Length: 541
Image 1 (cartoon, rainbow, N blue to C red):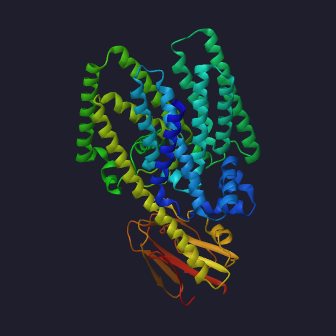
Image 2: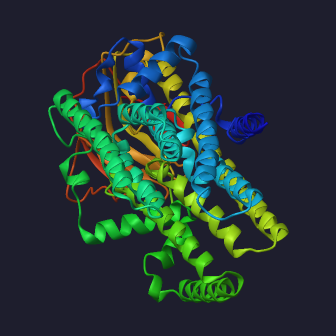
Image 3: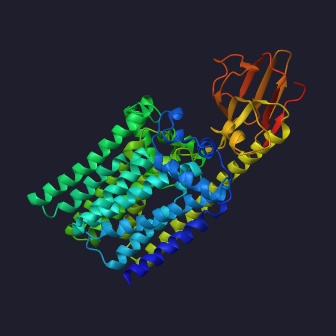
């Protein structure tokens, strides 16, 4: 009977997942999708260790692309189906993990079920998951999280039953998680936290020795993975490089932790809020909000002391510390990486840590709201807020995908020569990547109408709207590109065969104008610029 209920819950999570992400199912490929999937289509599996991007050893991730290309070819629907299916399964595993972790607490079975269902639902609909789920290339975090959750569940099953088969399953899932993404290196430390929280009640030397032996096996697998990865990459760090991954400046880590904590609970914030968040102590709104939050916390602490005994409070505090520790440790592998409060860029790094953030929210709500009807009402409000935010963010991902498709088609159908030169190519739409990478691969692998010998891009442009426009001014020996919106800017600028940036010191990345010196351009070159959602050929070249 219990297993049948589990299958019903699993079915509900899968159904809800496809409904929640239905508006991006037929979205086109964008950015890294072209470079990664394109090479897999061409039989080039060098992206397994991705040396051209600094070094990523992710064979299981690339294998999933290989399976999808065999099943779906160039149909993006199939790739999105895989992402959504794994995300739905992850939401169910969050539910199952919550149930298993709450077994150690003296809670009514209905309360445990309610908290676990809430945690799974919050994870499923979390609006900060779009980069991991809606972006096909974000699958790497979804896959790694799937195997990490399976490994933790198997370990907790072993901790309860001492069945070696469950420990073996946990070790296998851990190995697969490492082969999906390097951030799974945090899992042995998560096992330590879970193990210590369960061994506190029985501190006999035999149990402690068994626990240490199990942890040693996890770390042995981790060391083997590091050695194999270093052998393939030729580097111990790889990834985004030493400067990024080994940046432990206190100010940098503080800001990343604060941003991660906010985005693990809330969707991306309106850009207008940056005015008082950048200088919070100078904002009356921020100060009033902080005082209101402090007052609410004090009130809840007072009522909590009345509702629960000292033993119950001690047990609850221990569990909260465990959840907070799990969140922090799962965040450590990615805490050096950039994250935005106001855009989707970087939120994929929070996909796994948000498992424990969602569990923390669900547990706190159940403990602080005594009336079940009120708890359910507040949960419905949060889920509704998450759903609306998720839908809006996914609309941006869909717009970015439509723009990616239209740019590819317009370049193919409007060009007549073998060499393409693009003055300003959309890099991203409000943080959602468009052609941050991948344009050459898009034109090489994702269309069969034209073949281009050379593709150059002078500047990559950040977009706030699909219809953002530019003004092109041509002089005898120069050309000026001016972005009409002050909110736009150029994220990357490079000199090309046909043009050279006139003054690198004055043409900074934050500026929205570029002055270019015209150089001798070969006759087989078509020059395009992006304006109000279209790629337009520059006339009279």
